[in-house]
Image (cartoon, rainbow, N blue to C red; front, top):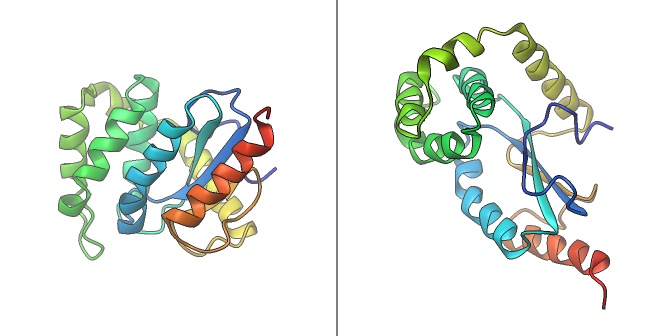
Length: 177
């Protein structure tokens, strides 16, 4: 299935019955704006919802920051570095001339061992991971980020409320009455 791959980062319980898939670009302002809403959804349904992030490196500098996130995952610092990178995004993610060094600084402040991360970022498997995610986003017709699916369904329209509503509908289907 193209929505979820074995390599995809998962936030929340692996066994959660509701899966939110987000095609995500760390340099995307809309992804940054949606992040607090996605975190609220996860907090509202801590046992029933998991988030699967799929990478969509659509902006300059994104692929390198994605590799940084993957290196953070190897150090069990993924969520902290994700949050720090999004917080620092206005400084580093200029679409004409990104300053990815500022993303590295944010990751280090979030507790990432940068020397180890730089080493891990050289792993050719990361290029394969990115290639697979890009192939999947094209095959699925993803044209921008963030793009969401909830248990394979797209929200009726774009916005935090339609996303939250669809998640609530899917959670209601799996909750005993």
